[in-house]
Length: 81
Image 1: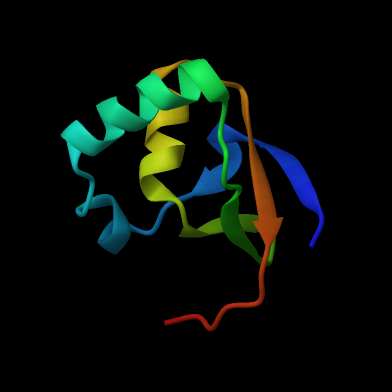
Image 2: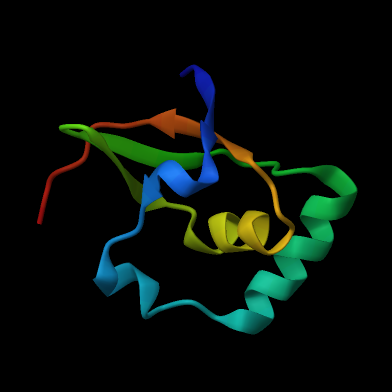
């Protein structure tokens, strides 16, 4: 699968997923991202004009906390709920 660099601000996180953020995990991941970068690409899907996060919420939040402009992502086919 091909990895794409996608702008952090263009990734939509469904409200249901946003409630599951663990700040301690975000801090740990941010420290890891500072040293090694994002090791595992986020999974996203296209929903019309919108790019929706499927997997990688804590990695996305860590990238935001570090002020990253883009993150590596893989497009996947996922069912809408």
